Image 1 (tube, rainbow, N blue to C red):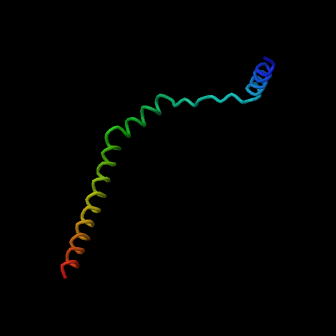
Image 2: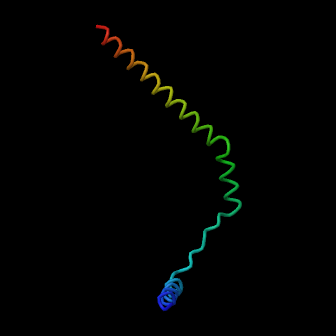
Image 3: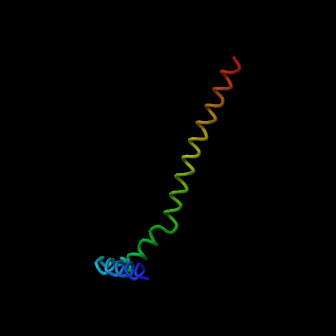
Length: 74
């Protein structure tokens, strides 16, 4: 019983000494502007970039496989 009371007191004192942290609030106008800029074009750009990377890497892999097959055939 005394341990529980002592721990409760320590917790109360600890929480009383801690600064209160306020959660930042994004203004509605800023949130709307960000959503407008990233809705369609942001994801489209990422998709296009990913497709180009896949294309280049795919072509590199095909060339490497052909080179390995050619060397193995000799």
